[in-house]
Image (cartoon, rainbow, N blue to C red):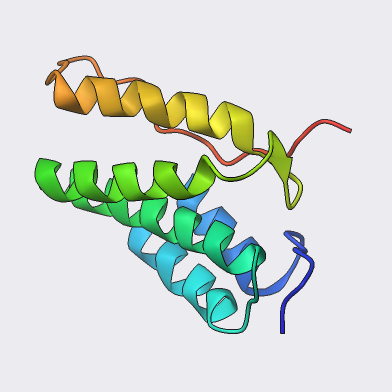
Length: 122
């Protein structure tokens, strides 16, 4: 049972490194292994990150509708969390995701940078 996130080792770290390298499917796979053992509220938070990774995997494969759907689901889950959760700057991540939603929905040619999953400042 996972109750506390440790982003410095194991599957959480591997997923984070994959995400940051643009290996979204691989990030999803690593995080899913942790998600399977997690309990709430960590379980839904991880699910949001898994959906986020899935969204950019779809985007990279040219599936805009799949990317939009997963991005919306990710954001709806993240909206339930405080500005900082599990050491992650959730508020910043949500703002970045909203920018991506607008870009995808309006078919903006110049997309913003891929949202990063950053640690919250102490």
